[in-house]
Length: 181
Image (cartoon, rainbow, N blue to C red):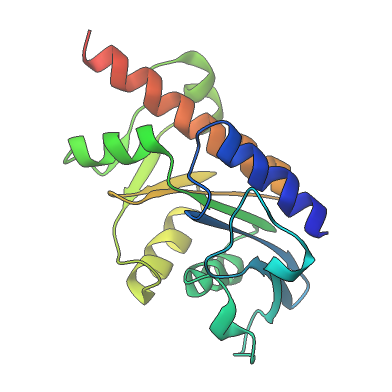
């Protein structure tokens, strides 16, 4: 399984969707979750950078798991997601800081079709507030943008979460340039 994490971690960094140390990924399997370790370099993942934790109760590995573990747990408990990717996508961050709106409305046809609107949520890194806001918004959306922080995308597998994250960044990039033309 770690090879899937490595594959999409490399893609996230290679395509400028995040920097090596910024972001995290997880996959749910039953009552367990496999999540990247805190401080992992997403473009250099191996089996030692993925931690297995329980979905419903603390484990001894929680302390080395991503600082967003609480957010991933809450999303899995309250949505049908089986995979999550969080990245600090530049255009998503920029647009979230440039607006006072609670959502971004894509302007390109593909993003409108796939995403409809993209909620902008708030909450501090690794906080219960962020966990609640993300899980609530992801009940009805494929991705959200954390104001000034980045994107969280979900899917049934990491590839679907990756595609949804890419779609958000594409929508934000197009909208950024359209709003300035």
